[in-house]
Amino acid sequence: MLINTDPKTTKSILAAMTLAEYESLTTAEKTVIELSQYAEAEAYSILETAKLDGHAAGMEKGMEKGREEGREEGREEGREEGQYQKAMETAKRLLALGVDITTIQSATDLSDTDLKRLQHSTGSTEP
Image 1 (cartoon, rainbow, N blue to C red):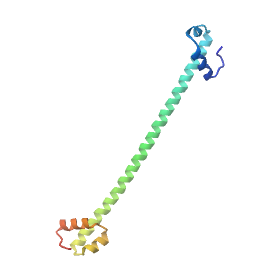
Image 2: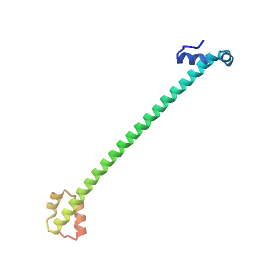
Image 3: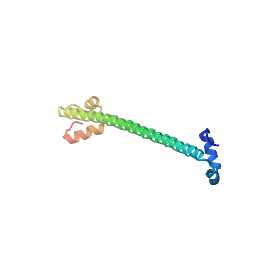
Image 4: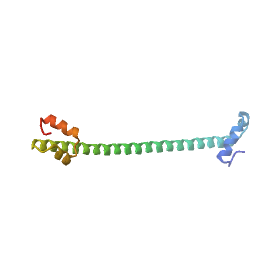
């Protein structure tokens, strides 16, 4: 009865089959049905496992990309902070040498606020 049927047909037949009909099947027919159900469950399990593995791999790849972007952003911030600190040190030395604020600002690209704060902290009287 159910031998050599495709999985979709077997599934449809099983859905329509009552317990009495199932019990009337031969052992061979029951075995075919059970093996078909097992194969379908196994295929589903393999597919779901592959999906989960793919999802996990995608998540890991995304997380690694995020970490790399974070590291790059951190390096960029570090470079900017280093440049700022170097400009502040240069401005401090120039103030100590008596160089005017306009020239220091042109040379270092520091803001008026930074230079005024630096003047205040060093006690410089340069206007």
